[in-house]
Length: 237
Image 1 (cartoon, helix red, strand yellow):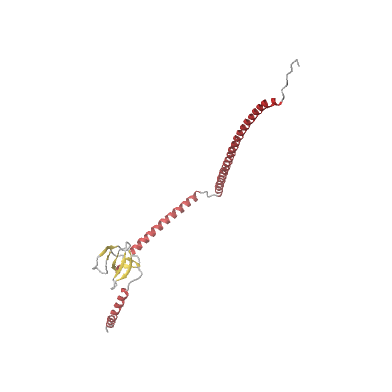
Image 2: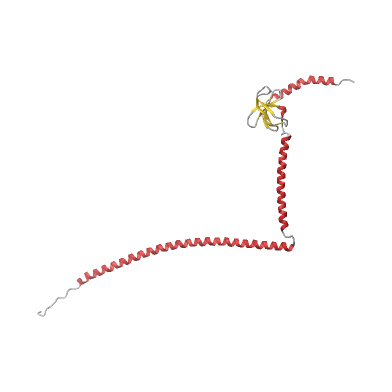
C-alpha cells in the first residue's frame, strides 16, 4: 500500500514557513482599538512588565473572569499588552484570554438573575394570594353582596357630604374673617373721625365762648358812650 503521508509532509514543509511568516506579520501589527477580554476559567494569571517570562511581575495573579483591556500583541503573537481596571499596564499570555466571560462568571450571573426572578415571583405570588384573600372575605351571595355594596356607597356618600361641608365651612370662615377684618378697619376709621369731630367741637365751643365774652366787654364799654348824658337842672333855673 503506497504511503500517502509523504506528499502531505512535503506540502506542509513547503507552506509552513510562508504561513509562519504571514502569521507573524499579522500579529506584529499594533492594534489601534482596544477590546475587552476576560481571563480564562482556569487559574490565576500573572501580569509581567514585558512580553516574556523573563520580565518582572507587575501583578501576582488575575482571577478567572477578571476583565482587562487588550492592546497590541507581541511579535510572536503569544503575549498581549493589557490594562487592568486600576490602570496597571503589563503583558500576559494570549492563551489565557477569551472574548466572553468564563463559564463560572456566566453561571454566577445567571444564578443571580434566577434569584432575582424567584424573589420577584414570590412577591407577585404573595400579592395574588392577598388579593384572593380579600376577594374571599367578600360576600359571595347576590343579596349580601348588593347590601354590602349599598352600605359602602352610602358611607362613601356621607364622607363626601361631610368633606363638602367641611370645605364649605372653611370657605365661610375665611370669608367671615375677611369681612370682620374689613369691619374692624372701618371701625378704626370711624373712631378716628369721631375723635377729630370731638376735638373740633371743643375748639368751636371755646371760640364761641371767647367771642361772647369779648362781645360783652365791647357792649359794656362802647354802648354807654353812644348815648349823651342828661344834664341835671336844679330848682333855680
